[in-house]
Image (cartoon, rainbow, N blue to C red; front, side, top):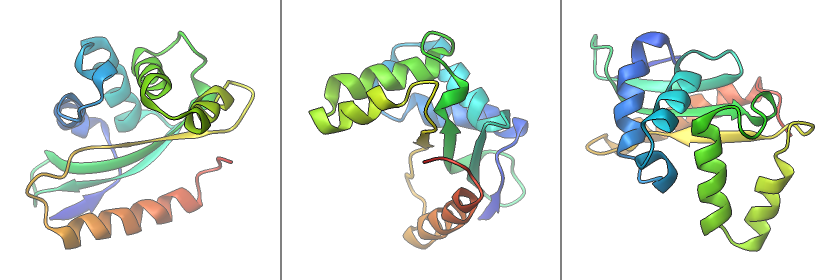
Length: 140
């Protein structure tokens, strides 16, 4: 396994991982999956860590953070789908966090791909590297 920063070459893998993520709002919308995958793969308003299987560009897992203030409600289908899903399933305290993530605030959204058949040590390393990435990612 190798670790990398998200890049456009990981876009197809991100689409597949997000499609399998179980986030209801994403599963129902190809546009939502496409937009969120594109943000995680190549938008400078995001940061993350990718796990690939050796020299292959296919990501087997990833974690990414997105600056929500860059995406006002109604502008990006993937961000809207996640906000909508959180608002529907989250307890009231979590809904307050979703409501607080308006354009004037500096909030982040963490997106992760599923980790099927990825050894626990690799997932632990992924999150250690992702935490290091977040140290330089300015969100509240």
